[in-house]
Length: 254
Image 1 (cartoon, rainbow, N blue to C red):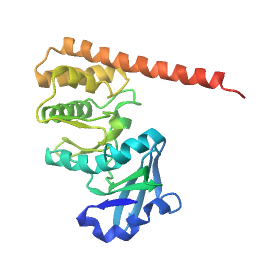
Image 2: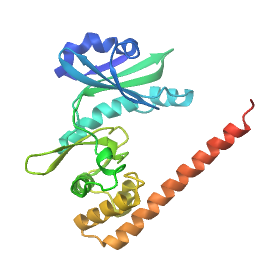
Image 3: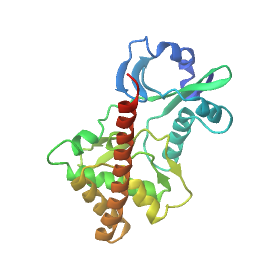
């Protein structure tokens, strides 16, 4: 097992060394239970969030063992890059890589807990979304692009927000391990392609794309049309994937 710990959290080293064994049995609160599992723990007077990534298949074991960084390591290191470029993200505490028979099997990323709520509930499942919040989020995404950052998943659940006394919104960014970084602002096509992961809600998507276009001094109508094209292609891909899954279930024996 490989453990890398932020020196500011060396006092948690014993607890972290036992985390793979503790994860399923210790009384942490489950925040998300899906492909990846996210749980909240309190240890040494510190509230922690632990993300256990999905176990990898054999081909991925080979790749992560010999050729590329694991998602856990990327999450740890990418958080620092976000901070260096002026964006808030929970402090990285550690990452853990569990190996079996010399091959990588599963990874864990540990960060500090952020109590701020995600933007998703205030924007997507409500009849009237918070326009100021949506506008502020569009501004944040624009700033990320201008700073050479393409977040790997702009789902609004990955943006924790806080409303300040003066009415402004501030954001803490999570789930950064699939991000891409450049020395300069990406080209227009890359930026619009990145926006496709924001939301499937059309009125909200179009509103934010148009706000984004104004900030970039682009034509809002043309920008909206291009961004919708990428969103529709993504939705078609998801639809075909679901159809393939149904076909496999239908054709499987028993």
